Length: 265
Image 1 (cartoon, rainbow, N blue to C red):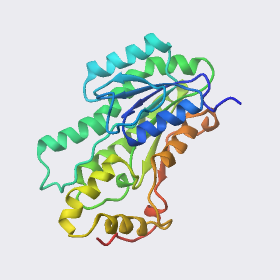
Image 2 (cartoon, helix red, strand yellow):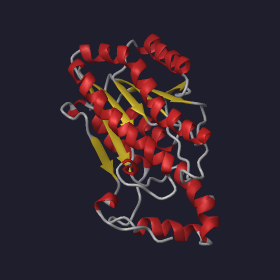
Image 3 (cartoon, rainbow, N blue to C red):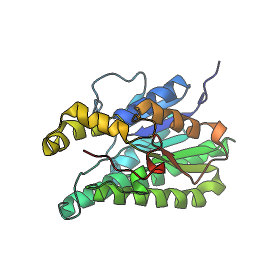
Image 4 (tube, one colour):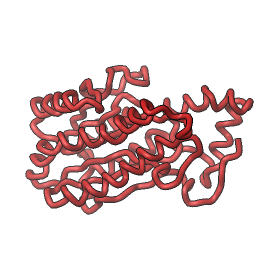
């Protein structure tokens, strides 16, 4: 039985991180040729990820992005799917955030999405010209709609990604290129692990398990997400089954943003 992405070529930024690695694994199972782009081959996880092809990439550097796209072009000739999963989070208010931290947040989360999307377009047009739509999937957040305290720069960057996603969908839809954004809530990744093991525990005086349970309980579904949950939705958006889906912000947060409730830590 053929996979949903059989014969397609995908590049995933942040491809060695928690969510990025799950996306690469799912794409591989669905038959795609996958390029996992990240700062290092190991990334934030130590376990192997299957058979994706590693591409070294700094999304904040235009020459690095251009070199990565040239490599994909030389190896595969086209690009059907781009997933902009690279991202960082700074847990500070604006008063606590330095200008350097603010600029770095935008460089990775927003400018990185801009650069990889911009320089992927020639390869994606080749894919779209073959008859099936090409797909760009950006990473926003539920924090781009509502705000968590102490995440000022992160919330601002995700709001920018949401607006950019819609603009790109309008500009490049006529070329057969679909553009959507995934907007996750809390997902069990190395980024979330740093919250549990870092200042969150020390600042509240509560145990890690108490914090984990509080995070589960704030969701209507009483659980937070896994990287595979996110990969499942990304896989559908990347496939031809989603040929009519574009310009949308797909919230996947266990119902968190549907309610008026604050987590009590």
